[in-house]
Image: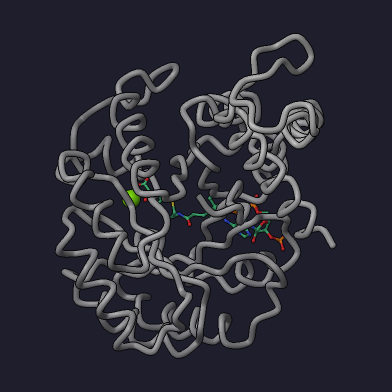
Length: 291
Ligand SMILES: CC(C)(COP(=O)(O)OP(=O)(O)OC[C@H]1O[C@@H](n2cnc3c(N)ncnc32)[C@H](O)[C@@H]1OP(=O)(O)O)[C@@H](O)C(=O)NCCC(=O)NCCSC(=O)C[C@H](O)C(=O)O
Ligand SMILES: [Mg+2]
């Protein structure tokens, strides 16, 4: 798994110049410039031009800039990818991907459009078909730029008629399967959005639930959600201190060659060492975003 922080991934409508400008001042790790569901059909072409200009102009600092294009099956998808490629964003996010064949097609379209070698492909998991095809979809990561899975729970609710009740009970199977599939292929996995902007308490609880499920971060819809999300998905000071203690303990000469030791009274194995290294890598990557 990459240590690039992807805690807070803020969507903004590509047709909203104020939001595209405001994003330059926000502490989101990732900006998702949207050409899909937040843009009305009549505004698709002007939003595409606006987003292409914004990406070309830059000014987003160390934030990762990812453009959510329309699906390839729509009248706009291919033209979106073609227009965005030359502006060199960090990646694209493709909605409603359901098969490994679509991942291959998106990858080819990115190459044809002149995306840089290291530009990443993010895809949305938001239909029942996608959930049942997860193993094949993530296997496509071996031969493509696929790096990130993003949950789309509004669409999944629409497709399945599941209801967003307390604790997201109906969605938990899909959330878990998506995290597990992502981990199988070494991908980042990002949780869905919380629609009730005014409910800060419910939002933070949902961030914590996402963290417990194993997500690397959460997709957001409003600037007011960024700070709490960053805090929840960052390792705590206690976790960083513990991780450093584990790394130091395994590095000390008296523990050379050992597979299991005691650190602060707790059984600690090499698997904990790997986790500790990941915690420190993420903490350092977050720190480097600040400098
Ligand atoms: C929901 C909103 C339309 C509300 O906008 P607004 O009424 O303008 O909010 P505020 O007045 O509170 O805004 C305060 C300032 O912040 C800026 N702003 C607001 N939202 C954003 C944003 N997302 N990014 C950047 N900046 C933002 C406003 O311009 C104000 O600026 P200023 O006046 O200079 O202080 C709006 O929040 C919004 O459009 N949100 C994003 C909607 C979106 O992108 N939806 C699509 C993605 S979600 C999705 O599709 C889920 C998935 O696919 C699934 O299936 O689940
Ligand atoms: Mg959606």
